[in-house]
Image (cartoon, rainbow, N blue to C red; front, side, top):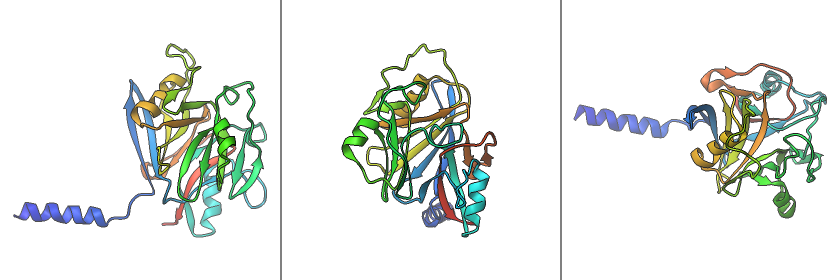
Length: 247
């Protein structure tokens, strides 16, 4: 009886506990290890960051956190979110708090960004979605925040057609995939060097996201204080993150 009461008390306590803004954990898939952070896109304050109020690029997670602290807030989670030029301006479409700072690039080009199809990560008031660029132009969704990157990793449940199972191109990579209902965004970063094919399989086969987008490689970084991680490194361009009340 005492054990039953203790179990019931534990269940009640867990039910009453506030839900975490983001759940970050390590997982293995096909002999590779990743850190995956699942965000409730319908409830959490998910934003993109590029310039501070003075017009300078944030560049680092700590700079965003310092700015948020002035308003009694903090950065609960963050990740680099798209490719950028040497001056850290976004290569493709970029919208921040409803203001477009860079238009959509729909043509093929050099590098990973131009490896079509590429896509847009679109954050709206009640959901977040990865949308292939041509579909994005057709749908014209009203994104409060948006960042374009490439290539797409998963398109409507299929891997990008240019990905090769026997590729020898391996890097630390990061990206985002979204659930079909737009309520969950899965941000993933590899713990070692992986191919595009392996990274895309993580989203399609393990995370079950119908659409997923590559953010970058080599400079891939994660800020996840709940697991004691905040990666240092070179200055970044666009950054995606969750804003929450300061502790």
